[in-house]
Length: 204
Image 1 (cartoon, one colour):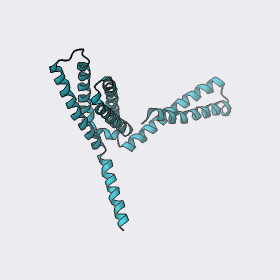
Image 2: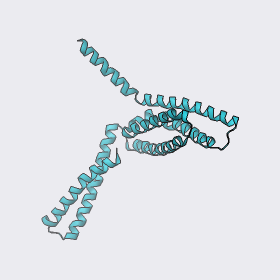
Image 3: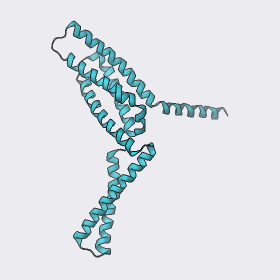
Image 4: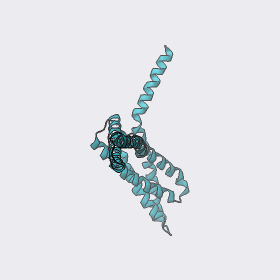
């Protein structure tokens, strides 16, 4: 769940709860101002925590995940985000103009996979090949390519290696694109089913 959205929801519940507890304590129970304020803060804190538990539970239920699974996915997404950030820096630092489109494609697809998985964590299990294999390969090759291509003098042997690396990165880009299509395969199947139903309805 979006942390900022969860914060807004929890605050929206906790702030009125704090005010209500203070009013009841100060006016209803005739407690002192400071005692009422302390009780109100505790009450607001409890409301904030309980709202977080409730929203997280609803989110997990909607995505059909256990808390253990969600922690596992969140940890892997956190690590993946760091890798994607490194990849972004590396790809934008390259000066090879002809590979610009390929770099843009890699960034677009990797960010799309990450955003889909972050929004719907259950998709992580269909994206494991991307997170545990292809993303690492793209990052490692890109970092090595960036380092070697930045050398002041490039020999024929090095140029050959760089050319081979570009070719391999192109192949990996295709693999990453296949990962995206696999993640979306259920959505595509559902859409095709809806299209078939709509066509049958039109025929009738």
